Amino acid sequence: MRIIPFLILTLSFMGLTSSIAQNINSNQSVEYYSLIKRYETLSSNYNNCDLISFGETDSGEPLRLFLINSSGEFYPEDIHNKAVILVQNGIHSGESCGIDASIEWAEELLTSQNLPENVVIGIIPAYNIGGMKNRGCCSRANQNGPAEHGFRGNARNLDLNRDYIKADSKNAFAFYRLFHWLQPELFVDTHTSNGADYQYTMTLLSTRKERLDAHLGNYLEAKITPYIYQNYDSLTPYVNVFGTTPNKGIKAFNDMTRFSTGYAALFNCIGFTTEAHMWKSFEARKNATSKFLKLLTQFVDENSTELKENKRIADSEYAREFEYINLALDTTKKEELTFLSYAPEYHFSEILGKEQVYYNRNKKETIKIDYYNTYVKVSQVHVPNYFVVKGAWKEVITRLKANEIELTMITGDTTIYGTGMYISHYENGTKPYEGHYLHQKVTARDSAISMDFSTGDYLVSTQQKGWRYILNVLQPESDDSFFAWNFYDEVVQQKEWYSAYVFEPYAQKMLDEDVMLKMQYDAKLESDPQFKSGKYRLYWLYTQSPFYEKEHNRLPILKLY
Image (cartoon, rainbow, N blue to C red; front, side, top):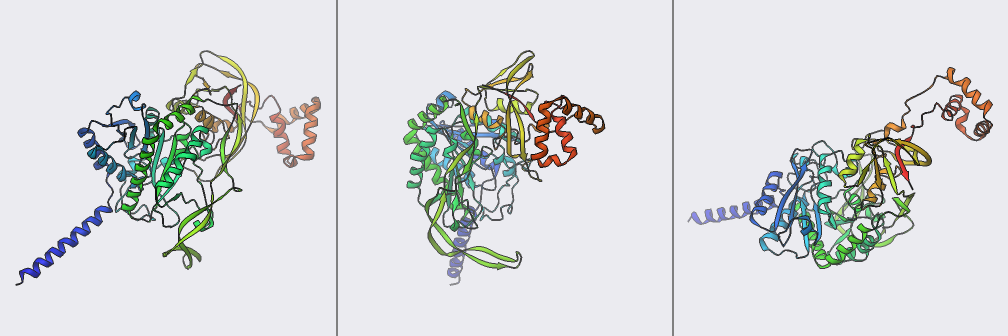
């Protein structure tokens, strides 16, 4: 008689523990070595996939690429017969929904053999391997699971999504090799968001259309983006708030070239960043990421010929006479966006000593908000036919070569006449940013000069496929130029100086003997506030003298038109 209740209790307990186990499993993200083992198993068991290594990362582990091709061909000439999607996971390893979504998607595709015919799928299992191995429960304070996850910083504590131009990490150089070997038409970087709360599980940002070649930008805006939003239920643009909450409007994200999609655009690759909402369950975020990957693959499979042709045209069009190198948000243009919100409420915080916003998930709202989705091109430059670059700055040459920029070495000593660039102004913060004191608001003036070059210096033609990259890294006003990232800081520090008691008599002689100089000096006495300082007046005269070093503020780069 007592056995039946015992069996019932046992079965009930078994059902409960099974349910608990399912809940725990749904909140687990795969750890690094298990992840790689699963990709290795697929590569061993199926002929239409391959796992390839592209060089060491800061963690000591290689950066790997998993390829899926229905034809089972993996030489570059075979891959490029089809359109290519590259999916990058775990650049911020705590944002792990893409890591798990991609391996499960790959397993599903290969076990079912339901492979797209016109697409090659490339998956980076985990980009930030060091961060993924730095596993714990709690580095993502705003995130709802998984139970354990990786860390944002890589093995040397770099945020790799700020490293595509400065390339301080081995990861970046391994990525360069992978990216230029694969030459994808489309790139997807999977993330989990931070920020406001709302009903959506998935938000999306894409390469700014203004940053792309016109053929690609128009195709993105007219065809790819509408297809995605029409076929993905409950999707909204990345929630980049204008005020405190989305209710006050959102603005499109400016994916500068330090970021993954901005970098990819320099080489005519359309990029997307998926941002699954941090407060939804890990299972929901993973499924939402998988849904996007499947939808984008479907689009590419149906439109591969168009995609490839647009990229071919973009790759064949080289630099124009004038080009813009930066973007700025146009706050005069906005559109109305239907947005699925939670009602924001404000409560007084004793800790903060003021009102703090919270979101009431029991009060769902469908509201209209302003969406600012237009950027204007700014910082126009006259594009030279060639840049001439000093080889002594080896960090610059190394990065140009790593990005497959064609360089022609100068042999022998020579003097070249062209246009030099002098730094006029820059600003930077008081704290380092990703290992650098990033220069901002840079201005430079062009000047006709001669410059000496020798063996080991290089001519860099802008009439090549990577011309946008060349322009963005060598033109100092670019937001992510090599100058902005401190590669040329040596030139803004003077190496020689003077003693006032020695130079002042010479300066007076300059004024006495040079009528034009005296007129300039007198005009500045009237108009330049800095001339109230005698010390500055003497320094200005020093800059007009033959003693002033011509290298000061001059980049070791010459432009040839």
